Length: 380
Ligand SMILES: [Ca+2]
Ligand SMILES: [Ca+2]
Ligand SMILES: [Ca+2]
Image (tube, rainbow, N blue to C red; front, side):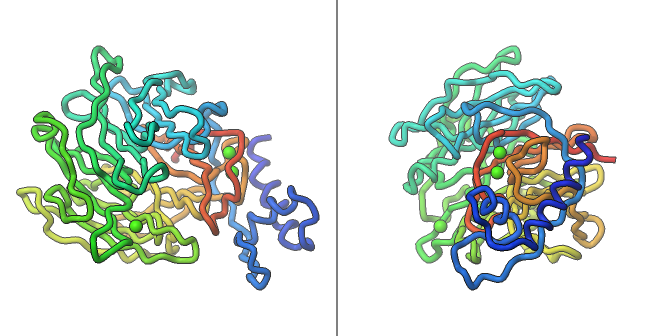
């Protein structure tokens, strides 16, 4: 039965596309999937969203966990999921643990930022010291550089004290450790002459162990590795560098949430910036990049095309050819259909997908809705 759902949905979307104007709110919401959102009556109908792949439901989450996001592989093989609850942050944020197909609390009393009174964990990763580090997105609460990098001290597989290791990010987003250095994207690292700025920052474990690092907002702080500028499109989103990972040769890649550009950043042996370039993609172009992960055995990048409700694969060893692994139109996420994917994690042949479900203007996903879901895609 599950396999029929994408087919049936696709048919429903096609039918919806051919029908007259919606008469009810439900019809209007369904129609949003095939007509770009916005109230401009002169807008030309977009083509139906293609349906491909077969994402499956891992589990659903309750209203207290309405916005799942970051994923980290723990040393014991379990996954840690961040739940920032940005769609409804009257519910406290938390970290959860995925064990097989089950979810259970991991750290449910995260320290709030003192002025925003909120915790907002995004991507997360275990460091070489065995501790867990997570980036915070306080940008939705305050534009005044309140985001942080946090450390969860681990003892015998259990979370202990949680402390701030870096503060004064604008919108800390993705994190990845390589050796003894952690790399962090800030999707809103503006500069005095660029209010569309973003950056990759880097910090050594030694430095983090010496005390809290205080970034200097609106500067080329010494921790800035590379900067980027977002070309704002019809979505109006100026968030830049988002997902982050590195390939088998140690080159870093990040993508822009606002305009979909993919960047390759190469380092010198001393860890400073050698060069950065914008990737030229073959095949499909990607308008929006959220979380991404690189399988370093193949150098295939799996990324969340949040705007188009799709998971794309970029073959970095084969001309940066893009293929769509899974895509569907507007859904509530039931049955595991993609509901604005934000983060991916590859464990073996299983790709875990967080359905963030918090749309921006002109996104395929029209509304944040229950069920709140995690999907999985089993690779061949
Ligand atoms: Ca900005
Ligand atoms: Ca949903
Ligand atoms: Ca939705």
